[in-house]
Image (tube, rainbow, N blue to C red; front, side, top):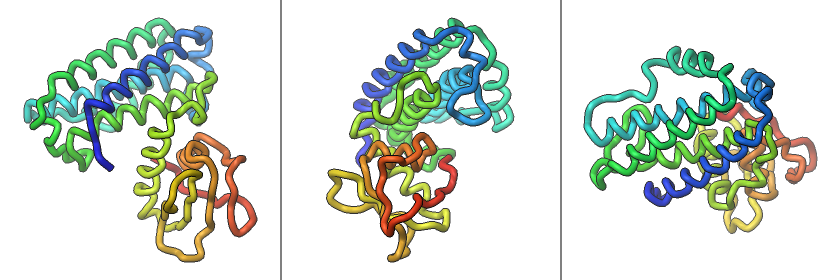
Length: 234
């Protein structure tokens, strides 16, 4: 799929604004309450959204300067950063997300055409894919806040792009599905089993179900039966 990082940065700006408006409407006590993401509080989700922006700022800096700047110092540092910030007051969390987003936006604005083509070994893609990765994080974790924003609020374009990414990511997980999103002429295939179950429904609903953000209640499956159990999306 074609990647236009400048267009995607416009989408990131809009998505971040929506998430911040949701956060501003939360009761401050919800920071320590469970989110829709198992094992994480709302504060964990908010802190991760901020630290993820900084991680992608590091990758854009790497692409622009050529100086190796990993997204996180280590997997342990990533976890520790989220845990350390999870219990902060809601107002502090909101300011942190806004500031981290501005740093990310500034890093993207400083990118040259050549820098966007820089291959980032940790992601296996060029820097041009970073704005999409950030958009995905903001939109999916907005749902995880469990505060009224759901997969039904995703745009058609985002939902289809997310679905295609999930399908590609599941290619090596040893199971097969035939997906028939409404309005899409050709099915999306996971695996190569000709007898795989066929799952149909709205694109948003299929993407939500495969990403663990929906129960698939409005999806159909053929042959008739329960929806298949799918691997955990990472």
